[in-house]
Length: 297
Ligand code: PAF
Image 1 (tube, helix red, strand yellow):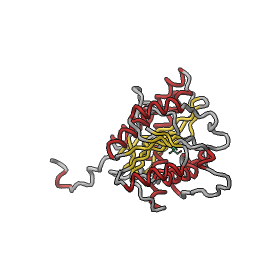
Image 2 (cartoon, protein in one colour):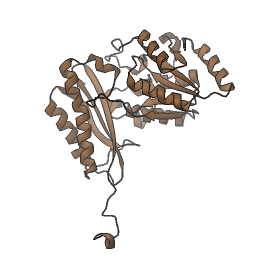
Image 3 (spheres, helix red, strand yellow):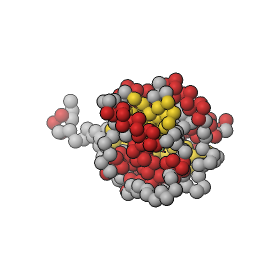
Image 4 (cartoon, protein in one colour):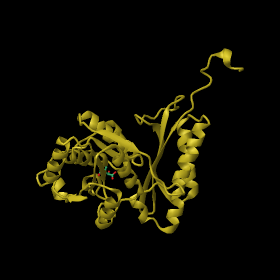
């Protein structure tokens, strides 16, 4: 495994690999790797010949009062984990390398980046889209892998790749969870013991809402209310949002349609730690649309 810090060097390597017919997979991360990231590496190894993990805590996706400085970093541990997971290259650039002085361009994804996470973190998705496009330029991957945990981010990145005609297949892998359902996240280390216990209620809220949808609940506000109730009764949560929306467009109809794929999205603070999670569920196809003559069978 090789660690590369310079973009030019990375580009020379990937040009050579592409010319040799190798398929490249890139796993963009902000480091402090956990099993969620390593599951992306595993999947990347299954679909490509060469795996590049990028480790870069991207300043432009953090708002002024967010946790950029506090974001956990442990390069030595990340390097050991990557080595063990069979990663071929780590790209670990300095901020100055990704954003050289005079840098003056950013990518703005309209619509899908403005609601939910975007409403609470207004510059976040511009920062994500900008850095991910730069990482694509640096690593020229055939495949790029992201976790479903950052659901809205996956939609933003797909939209960006489509709109900018970037020739990369975006692969989304399932969220990896602790035994009690809490989604693995680099920020989980900030939780105190009692916050950690309480945090499982986010998954409980998602599961309960999903269960009601499975039973046929289609009223958006009722679904949202179920999630809010679980978090409120758990106490201690400061809820940014607990919402349901169309899983592809993030539209929010009053009532979902039979068979519609719905995403349940939660962002909430426990103390100073902001946690996000989501769940995809489909509303059952309606039996009332069956022809009447079959109804008594
Ligand atoms: O999901 C993340 O870790 C980051 O948002 C990403 C995609 C690596 C961009 O900095």
